[in-house]
Image (cartoon, helix red, strand yellow):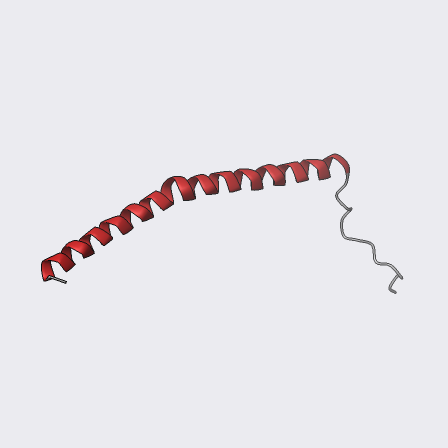
Length: 68
């Protein structure tokens, strides 16, 4: 015996729960974006640039020693 319209397993999210969920997700995503950018541009990129500068200088001194 199957009914014409099956009842959902749970009720839809409405009201204060929905508003709180949207607020929590917005804050979480916003803070994740902010701290992700802070890490990327405040720590990662300076370290990568310093590493690249080190190896660039190392290669230049190696090339100068070989006379190229």
